[in-house]
Length: 66
Length: 170
Image (cartoon, rainbow over the protein chains, first blue to last red):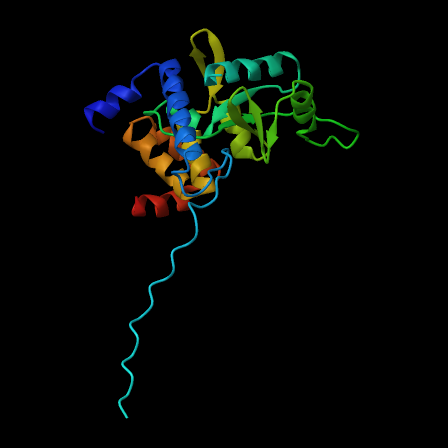
């Protein structure tokens, strides 16, 4: 574990809970802006970003010359 | 409403006799020991008072209380404050033991209890979803887990083989 993560792990529980509040709020903002593709448990589902892209098609076979 | 106030409201539920002993598990519980990681709900393991002549365990009193408080419900969650809370009755021996051995915690004067890191690992191992495996890795990496205590829990609940299998793949 690197020093930054160790510092975060050593924070008081109350401070960590405040960070969870902020992380969740940020995630909700991302969701409400429609930037997350699918809903997450405990969050309102927001569906897909839009119509699914068509699957790439194999190149057409050259037509036989008669 | 911050998570701290959600915990306060859960303590009020306990004071009002709706729930008895409880402990925080899941990602929020793990955060007690590791760096914070995004989560969307709060898992509460609890003992429910027996109700009815058949002595059934039911979450109905929690939902009735939520309704009186005008708290919303969303699938398996009760939204308390801003946080969806999942109440998980401790029915299986591992869950009961996790609840009994939970560790007291203090959130700026708000008393609560958190499931021990060894029991969080055992519960995550039992559930076995990718996010549970990630939580196990985080708890191990944070040096939060006492291996002797963990092995005792795993042996007691016949999870040692599953643990060995996971360790080989971690």
